[in-house]
Image (tube, rainbow, N blue to C red; front, side, top):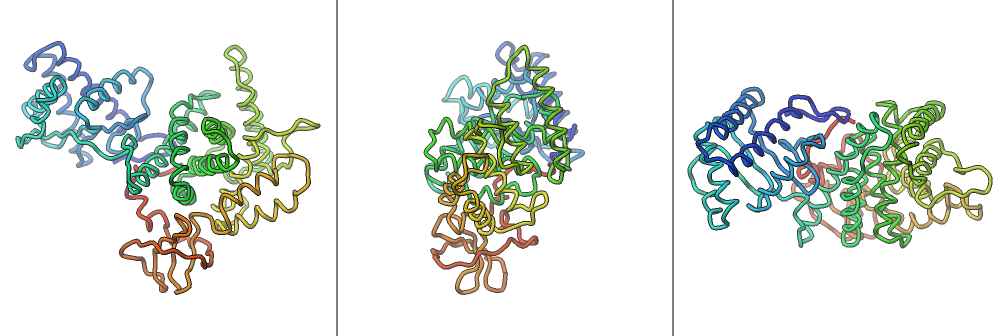
Length: 463
């Protein structure tokens, strides 16, 4: 299976996904006009058989298309589709909706005859609910339809909501990659899908705030700039909610993290160690392009402000504007949350610190700034951030009184992940604890894997 590399899918998976999507939706469309034995239908099915078996011969894997509310995946790989493909995705999603599934899979060894039988049953099930039972007949058609719990499943239990948070976060990282990739080709790529996912994460903060915060400390840790922006956006959303901001504005505040950092995509792998001079140059070039290409279509003042304030935060400038012009509220949230994530992950010239140490550093900074006029580093907003996280933020690695290790997840609960000897727990269990010592995260300890998070998220690597 191919992986994501620097925001790009390997061409074989991307092209295969587009071809399989075209063939499947082509068969569905053709069956609305012709009989199963029509030459057009049989040719499409034959081409689909060739694609599946050809891919199986190379990768030894089945071919599965899965959709969620906003995206489509091939074997859990996010597909970057052009606009003209949206109609095909809509046709596939419509069929899935009628059959109450979200994945169609084809297996090695399928033939024209087996897929003809399969699509006959699919077409009958779409036309009549009574015929859906035929999809479950034991005849081996070498193809299946099923529902895979994912983003579109609004679970009612705590476990369901936690699974939803994991998948939303994984999608946020994938969309972050996509946005950064597109930003190297146009000034302001569309952010509609990103805003929708962010808004659903905002909704989860009401019931699972601590869990989402813990997730933002470790999930996506190895995803480079995309992971940094995803984590910072979640932290910004949580902080905005603490300040009493209305939900619609919370999503916009979280989006400011992505909008303000689009120029960083042009720095490549050196984004985390870029000098102030390099950052200034790339922002100046990006701003010139924005103003040049946006002079006829218009560019919102908010987007320009976010670019300016994200640049100031990255360069550790105290104030964002000269004279008496104060900074925006979204910009101050952005500056604090991105700085916190840089401390936790050791991005740039900072060394990796525990969440508790990063919080203590912010607290010291707030004390120094107390009483100053409003600037990018607003001590009052830092105080709100400290109220949100507490001295031991969700996601902190701690050692308990008996020497065992755990992670703060839903305060005051600590999820035990290792005994006093550092041996991993065979089964995760929670324990309430008010006395725990924070530890810096050892490089060899993968918290996300220890908590079972990586088992539920799509594969994503590179950055």
